[in-house]
Length: 125
Image (cartoon, rainbow, N blue to C red; front, side):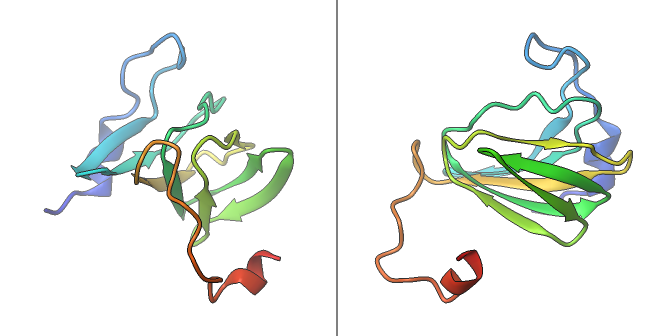
């Protein structure tokens, strides 16, 4: 299955909700089993709440600050971010062209830690 980023962005924003009073700036692209791929292009305030599944963000364009449980990092096109299920997080100070893919997968509560250290564990330290 193929999906076009441009087609998804043309659909945004979706109608406003109680949580997203300025409109919903996320659209599902593909889903299969526990995996869901969405495009997320928040404008104004990012009102997201912690999610039940693990998440992987891949920034497509623009820049933003990414706040996760008290720590903020600058992110830009080409960056990837992992968020464990249940972690409080949001994007702030987004540029007008900020867009990211977000991939949700796994069971509610997230996957268990890997049984052996990751090759990239030193990067996270």
